[in-house]
Image (cartoon, rainbow, N blue to C red; front, side):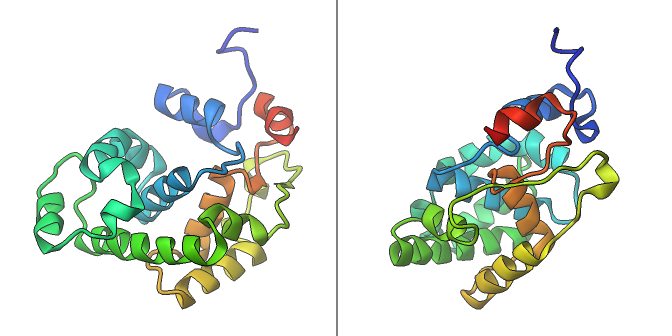
Length: 192
């Protein structure tokens, strides 16, 4: 079966960036704190925009934000903030960039408390992926009780731009939730 003959979740369309993300990353369980933070940064940057817009800026973010290293980002000062606001390769929204710096600090606090952010985020499902059995995009929720619970906990810990919809997207991205449609060729691969 060629790459174009594969049945995919319809949301990824045919854009190569979207297809690659769908085929290689979305729904694959993540257990790496740098990758968790990367997705949190990108998903909070996406608020009000399309995910494809953010994916196309991903490498620019990586360069501008020290490889998504929360320990470095947590130390960003006003000078670095102003530098980022001038960077046309990223989304230049002051609130979102300030939230990224704040969230890096809070992310590190959780990592110290739990041993890693990974242990924290996966503790909500007892380290198991939730495998849904959706047959149509219209069945996918924008948020769930689980994303509500995690969003509330992160907000109590001082995180910004972590509403339930953003957190549900995070859970989908990092494989805590497998929302590939059951006829998608990735469904069984990320379920096993």
